[in-house]
Length: 170
Image: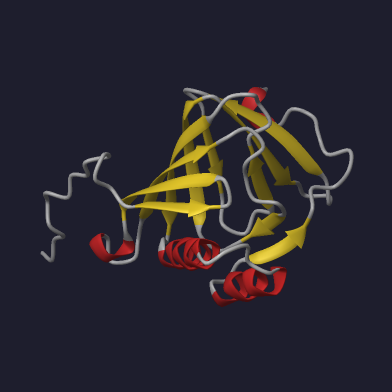
């Protein structure tokens, strides 16, 4: 049986850290260690942080919130968008192809353990966007090109009036 190396422990103090806008991404497992199947990260998002627009992509994601609270905006079946608050100790799964974005609308940092599967597209986008941001404020054209290159469709801002409590809170 073809097996991956068993000892892939990560020292958080020595782990690679990427910055996208105000968000910090600590790489826990790269696609190089998982045959492209998994990209796992810790995301630390300060108040006001998060992607600026709704988006969708083929990889699925699972968020385990470790600290604080995230607001997920998730597209519904009838062109609706639900706001789903997810607090420390709760999990938010997102199937591939689901329109969504995530924000920190609280007054404290929020931290989540996030797994993307398959991971290549998300890792590629994260690394390219962080590299672009490290060179200065990126243009919208550059961000759109990187997103398109990695199969991420940017859908625009969260619709006005999006809200409600989604399934995670029912």
